[in-house]
Length: 119
Image (cartoon, helix red, strand yellow):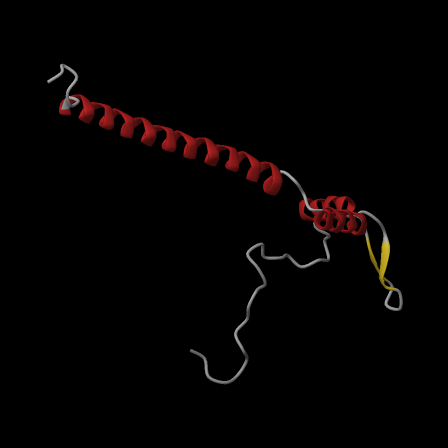
Protein backbone atom coordinates (compact mmCIF):
# COMPACT_ATOMS: atom_id res chain seq x y z
CA UNK A 1 0.00 0.00 0.00
CA UNK A 2 1.01 3.55 -0.57
CA UNK A 3 1.35 6.37 1.91
CA UNK A 4 -1.39 8.33 0.10
CA UNK A 5 -4.43 6.52 1.38
CA UNK A 6 -7.87 7.81 2.24
CA UNK A 7 -8.16 11.39 3.54
CA UNK A 8 -8.36 11.92 7.24
CA UNK A 9 -11.99 12.10 8.42
CA UNK A 10 -11.23 14.87 10.91
CA UNK A 11 -9.66 17.09 8.22
CA UNK A 12 -12.63 16.48 5.90
CA UNK A 13 -15.03 17.35 8.70
CA UNK A 14 -13.17 20.57 9.54
CA UNK A 15 -13.04 21.70 5.89
CA UNK A 16 -16.76 20.94 5.45
CA UNK A 17 -17.68 22.82 8.64
CA UNK A 18 -15.53 25.87 7.77
CA UNK A 19 -16.90 25.89 4.20
CA UNK A 20 -20.52 25.77 5.43
CA UNK A 21 -19.89 28.66 7.83
CA UNK A 22 -18.22 30.68 5.04
CA UNK A 23 -21.17 30.09 2.68
CA UNK A 24 -23.63 31.04 5.42
CA UNK A 25 -21.67 34.23 6.20
CA UNK A 26 -21.61 35.19 2.51
CA UNK A 27 -25.39 34.66 2.22
CA UNK A 28 -26.13 36.71 5.35
CA UNK A 29 -23.83 39.57 4.28
CA UNK A 30 -25.35 39.56 0.78
CA UNK A 31 -28.85 39.82 2.24
CA UNK A 32 -27.80 42.66 4.54
CA UNK A 33 -26.25 44.53 1.61
CA UNK A 34 -29.32 43.96 -0.58
CA UNK A 35 -31.83 45.14 2.03
CA UNK A 36 -29.68 48.16 2.89
CA UNK A 37 -29.53 49.24 -0.75
CA UNK A 38 -33.26 48.52 -1.15
CA UNK A 39 -34.09 50.74 1.85
CA UNK A 40 -32.01 53.59 0.39
CA UNK A 41 -33.74 53.22 -3.00
CA UNK A 42 -37.21 53.14 -1.41
CA UNK A 43 -36.35 56.31 0.48
CA UNK A 44 -35.13 58.02 -2.68
CA UNK A 45 -38.01 56.94 -4.92
CA UNK A 46 -41.02 56.85 -2.63
CA UNK A 47 -40.48 59.25 0.23
CA UNK A 48 -38.20 61.96 -1.11
CA UNK A 49 -39.96 62.47 -4.43
CA UNK A 50 -43.24 64.38 -4.53
CA UNK A 51 -45.59 63.12 -7.26
CA UNK A 52 -46.50 65.67 -9.94
CA UNK A 53 -50.22 65.38 -9.19
CA UNK A 54 -49.67 66.20 -5.52
CA UNK A 55 -47.31 69.07 -6.36
CA UNK A 56 -49.87 70.55 -8.78
CA UNK A 57 -52.70 70.18 -6.27
CA UNK A 58 -50.66 71.88 -3.53
CA UNK A 59 -49.80 74.76 -5.89
CA UNK A 60 -53.48 75.18 -6.79
CA UNK A 61 -54.53 75.17 -3.13
CA UNK A 62 -51.82 77.66 -2.20
CA UNK A 63 -52.95 79.93 -5.03
CA UNK A 64 -56.59 79.72 -3.89
CA UNK A 65 -55.85 80.61 -0.26
CA UNK A 66 -53.42 83.40 -1.15
CA UNK A 67 -55.70 85.76 -3.07
CA UNK A 68 -58.96 87.66 -2.85
CA UNK A 69 -61.92 86.14 -4.66
CA UNK A 70 -65.69 86.07 -4.63
CA UNK A 71 -67.17 83.09 -2.84
CA UNK A 72 -70.75 84.09 -3.67
CA UNK A 73 -71.07 87.27 -5.73
CA UNK A 74 -74.85 87.45 -5.24
CA UNK A 75 -74.54 87.38 -1.46
CA UNK A 76 -71.42 89.56 -1.46
CA UNK A 77 -69.24 86.89 0.20
CA UNK A 78 -65.55 87.17 -0.51
CA UNK A 79 -62.46 85.25 0.54
CA UNK A 80 -59.31 86.92 1.79
CA UNK A 81 -55.72 85.62 1.79
CA UNK A 82 -55.02 83.16 4.59
CA UNK A 83 -52.20 85.26 6.07
CA UNK A 84 -54.49 88.25 6.36
CA UNK A 85 -57.28 86.10 7.81
CA UNK A 86 -54.99 84.65 10.47
CA UNK A 87 -53.75 88.12 11.44
CA UNK A 88 -57.33 89.43 11.67
CA UNK A 89 -58.40 86.42 13.75
CA UNK A 90 -55.51 86.87 16.19
CA UNK A 91 -56.25 90.61 16.48
CA UNK A 92 -59.90 89.80 17.17
CA UNK A 93 -58.96 87.29 19.87
CA UNK A 94 -56.64 89.80 21.55
CA UNK A 95 -59.07 92.73 21.29
CA UNK A 96 -62.66 91.47 20.99
CA UNK A 97 -65.23 94.04 19.89
CA UNK A 98 -67.31 95.43 22.78
CA UNK A 99 -70.62 94.45 21.15
CA UNK A 100 -69.64 90.87 20.36
CA UNK A 101 -70.67 88.19 22.86
CA UNK A 102 -67.89 86.30 24.57
CA UNK A 103 -67.10 82.98 22.94
CA UNK A 104 -66.24 79.79 24.72
CA UNK A 105 -62.88 78.45 23.55
CA UNK A 106 -63.99 74.90 24.35
CA UNK A 107 -66.81 75.03 21.82
CA UNK A 108 -70.35 76.23 21.47
CA UNK A 109 -72.38 76.81 24.57
CA UNK A 110 -75.33 74.57 25.22
CA UNK A 111 -78.60 75.40 26.89
CA UNK A 112 -81.23 73.19 28.40
CA UNK A 113 -84.41 72.87 26.39
CA UNK A 114 -87.32 74.89 27.66
CA UNK A 115 -90.28 72.87 28.82
CA UNK A 116 -90.61 69.14 28.58
CA UNK A 117 -88.87 66.56 30.72
CA UNK A 118 -85.52 67.45 32.22
CA UNK A 119 -83.08 64.81 33.30
